[in-house]
Picture 1: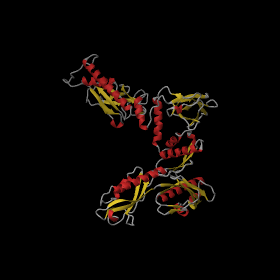
Picture 2: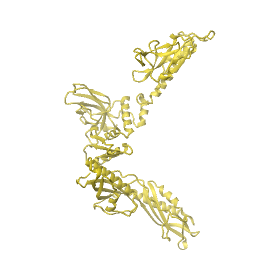
Picture 3: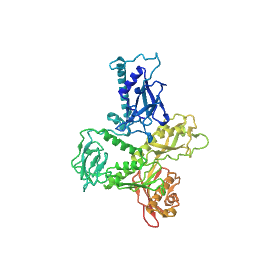
Picture 4: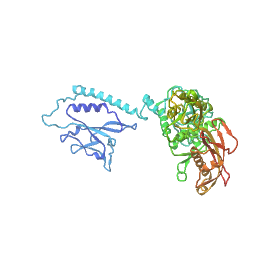
Length: 617
């Protein structure tokens, strides 16, 4: 459904015809099922008075109202049926000179008919300057202005038709703003070594980058054509980001992120400078369309768009492939990243991984050649302590004449974030201890210490995901998870020994697995088989470690957790360890790791060696 403003002349005709006794705005929908288009007057319709208004396709691709012509576009059949002039050989198409309303749209009919004697209208003067015509023209103008305003409101809601401030509000929905004069721009030259054999089009929005690190990225702001027989063409460009970073020297823009077929080189012969005018509507629409393509995610186009947002990455540096029959749910990515210093490359690669994770479809795994760590995942709540069956309270006796009842407390805090720095871990432990001390100190004579109340206070600490708590009166030897009530009426709980530990300490495992391929693992591409094995082993290990309840991790235990497969057998497993929070890397191979419940094991890397070939993946 679309809204089109009705013209002033149509409103005047409706009003003037209605005021002088005619029939107005009898509506019909242009559908085969609606035929015949029969007028309401039974007889006496004056054929030459029939006027038909409706919507037709406009030159700009939209729609507009027009008045159709009797005997050219339509005829009056049977004295009351509107019949559209059709091609004799194709009844569903208009004749050569005829024009029909848009299929499915509504058209309107005004006409006069002879009325019975004594039923003449009170108003009959339609001549220019008459009171009736002036009244119709005045009211018609108001209707036409309102109809035009409604059309502007309708157009303001669509990217193709919104302009100016309306377009600014529309693109804000996808996080874009119109580029101001603070955005640098200039001109680049696309060229060939030999004359162009045919016209070559450089589309608006083509992205370019400098050779510097970090690279400045630009895009063309107009469509240009390198004409046949020419060697070069100049195209205006604008920086993607405002500020001084877009001001670059002559000869700095040298890379086309998405290569244009037939173009050999690109460069800027002059330095870029700040723009003299704001971004136009056409350029802003183009940016919004590209943003919508990328925002949709879950498509190869969205993944390519996300990766090409990295400075220096071109579309031809990216190759996606998949085999839904042999490896369903897996997409292969080969990415050529620009050369840069190792420290800078590490953050650059991690950014590429983050973009892939943000844009990939749910349930689809992307297998890539980017040398970056697997994500550690989210923090897990602790397993907690088993509830004690029996009485809901533990009785505690006061010590000595003072009737003080010391209470010992063990607390384990599971933080929301993995890989905490030492200062953050100390902060959580300090806050946890303070909460326990304040809770016990607040208790009065003979007051019961409520277990769940202390748990709620501890879990309310900023940055805490889960809490494990057990306590006991000092005289008792058994740790408990029940309320504690003084046995003597005048006994008062006081602070005993408080031990607060912070869990989810991230322990990274870099695993090397030697496998013997069997069954389906011996067919197909050996590198793909090794990559699939690495992904499966890493997934199996991580899932097993997330629910591990043993007392230690050693080589035998870890190999048993690697799981089994019909396509390979694990014959050997080795690993190295790094305590991420403490920043300590253990040089010894395969060390035995005690598991106290505070550790969170993270399978960071998995390398697979083919026992038959000795290759590593």
